[in-house]
Length: 294
Ligand SMILES: [Fe+2]
Image (cartoon, rainbow, N blue to C red; front, side, top):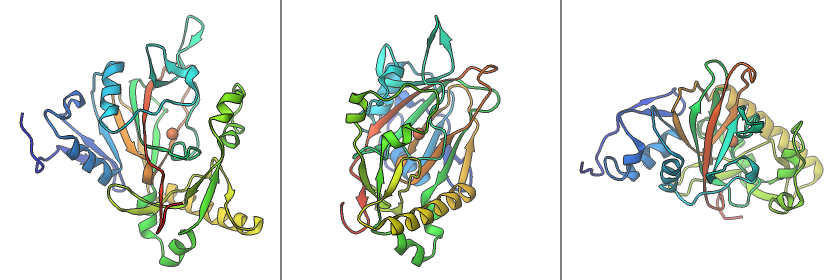
């Protein structure tokens, strides 16, 4: 089927703040039945897209991911899919005494991998087995929150540069193997702008992530603590007022834009339910700071 730039998607909003569900598309046909530009435009506008009832092999999930950029393998390669290491596995399932994936990952509000100099632009989750109760994924729009702020609050955040540490984030996890020296070497501390500009849309928004943040660069300890308190308040404001709770259906495919969105996993009964999610992500760009590159 031919398409043009005026093509319309069969789309409904997931909530008033963010997210859209796109019906009647087999994502394996992107580029044939629907243009990638149309999908990207919807993604940038709604920040999160949900495609239901997708039937994907590992290679097809990777093909879908590659539409959006270069694959970014996860640091914890011990949880990658054996037949396709570009896919990271989230699961509580154990087969032949071997866990299929990481049992607990993604808890606590965050945007992905701010501890990397070049964080992922997009993250994709594909649900092969999902709990009938719990195991939801929550999202909160930093853009919507930003747009609602007073100009004086925006000005307080513009120009702030936060320091992010993966070892700091990892140290909060319980019952996990310590990071190897190689994993630590792969993740030195990095600095990110607290306000960033979207590279495709030019939209300005907050880029804050408290879980791996160890302070503010270039200010006194007291000022750093004061700014972090301000950021913590913005975090609560965002998650309390601009969020969406995604209740998974089997074979849901979600893709979201990390540039203006927080997300978190939620608990489920690990003994009662099975969960198997494949995850991929895409290399982004060095975050573009407000006014100037850092
Ligand atoms: Fe995440």
